[in-house]
Amino acid sequence: MASQKLPRRIYKYRGFSNLTLESLVADQLWYADPSTFNDPLDTRPSLNADLDVQALESVLGRLVENRVRAEMSAAAKTISYQGPKTMDHIERHSRRRAEQLIADIAYNATNPDYDFGDPHVFLLGQYIEEELLRQYDKGIISFAVRATCPLMWSHYGEQHNGICIGYSVPAKVASDINRVEYGGSRLVDASDVAKMLGGDETARKKVDSAVLLRKAGDWRYEREWRLTGPRGLQDSPLELEEVIFGMRCKSPVMYAVAKALENCGRAVKFYEMREVASTFKLKKGPLDLDELAASLPRWSRALHDAFDQLP
Image (tube, rainbow, N blue to C red; front, side):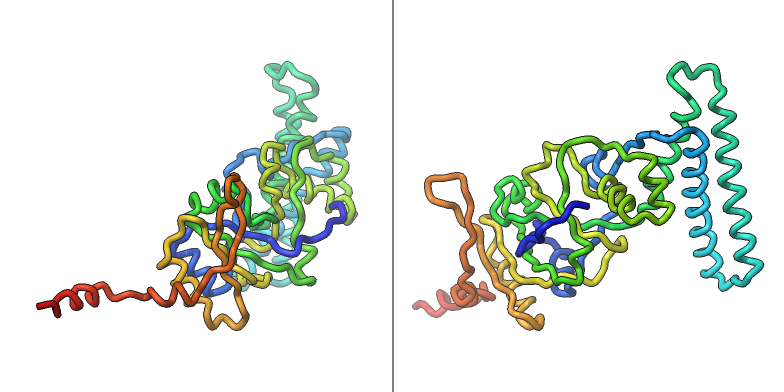
């Protein structure tokens, strides 16, 4: 991945919900499965089969062996069934699975219905793509570098009813967060996959970038950065710095979030989104917590009781 300068802040736009409040209070983040992203071409590389059949078979064989070995090792660990014989069985079974798949592909490539190029290379390329994606079990959290983007507020901030959460990035997390590249090709060279399997770190970074950090040019307005880690709910490795409320965010929501983070162990700043007069631009301004607390929480019966005292 190319050298990059980390932004001072990264922002997560969210609609407000119980889950949003829970993740804020617990200081946790959800690392999503890339297959759930709204763009089906996102994290979907296409293989450039720039190797001969024998080399492609070798790449596919190693990918399949790695996957089957990992699956069987995890199963053996779960049932506490380990030892030299177990590991030997796993190795032999993994190798047989890879050899059988490669033999099946070679046989299917002789199908006379295929009337394009080299069917053998095509089928090997398809299976390598599938195996490559199956083994990318990383989760992704998407962030923006701007808290004032109107499109981001509309698309991800619940049309300004939600919030935007600002984080700083500690130095020890820097290697896990990277800028998304927009446009270009979805191609991944099979030769780079082969080098990656051989332990070449430069090739691994190229493949990682192609799989995890490449999007269509139409998404460029997002200026996205991605944090990778184990899938699912995890403790946040970032530092929560600020919460910005959308222009339509309700006062009780603002109050609830501010109170919930009151004793979180660090000073979190609160802002509200405002318009720049006579323009379509947005700016953030400090939220007046004292003014908010003066009217909330409210007791609706108090108003009725006041009128009850009238003669």
